[in-house]
Amino acid sequence: MELTKNIFFNTDKLVENSKVKISYIGKLFQDASEEVFIHYGFGLGWNNVNDIKMEKTDLGFQAEIKLGEGDTFNFCFRNENNCWDNNNGQNYIFPLEKVQNELLVLEDEPVALGSAKKLRRSYLWSKKVRLAVYKLITYLPKIISGNYKRKISKSEN
Image (tube, rainbow, N blue to C red; front, top):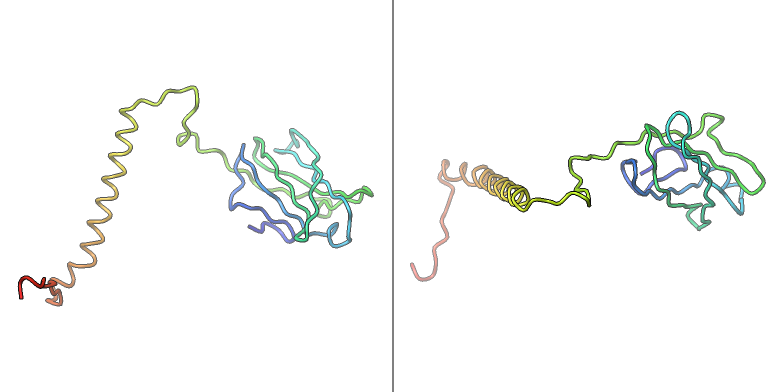
């Protein structure tokens, strides 16, 4: 996913407490810098500030980052000569999505077998309902119009 020119992520969404791989082919890569560091933090106050040296590849500089908590993921880049790419003083700022807690099963919480069976049963019912709707949409018009021909087995001939 390209969120801005010359910066790419390996995911469609940036979610709190997840890992993301970032690729950079911006000004510092184009100027043939040997080393590039990503300087990043989270939220309006740039909490948990960190610097990571990015790996140089033919496809640009790349790094894997564990996203923290906050409303935004803020970052900029610098090279070994302390030249910065900070989006013309604006920094690169992208929104972070919250983790969907209702879908998570925490390790400390035992999962009741009954709730797992209920989830499985509701999943199976949803599959059956979707199959029934598909068959109605596919075969009902053919039956009504008379274009439905039953396959005759060889034993009926």
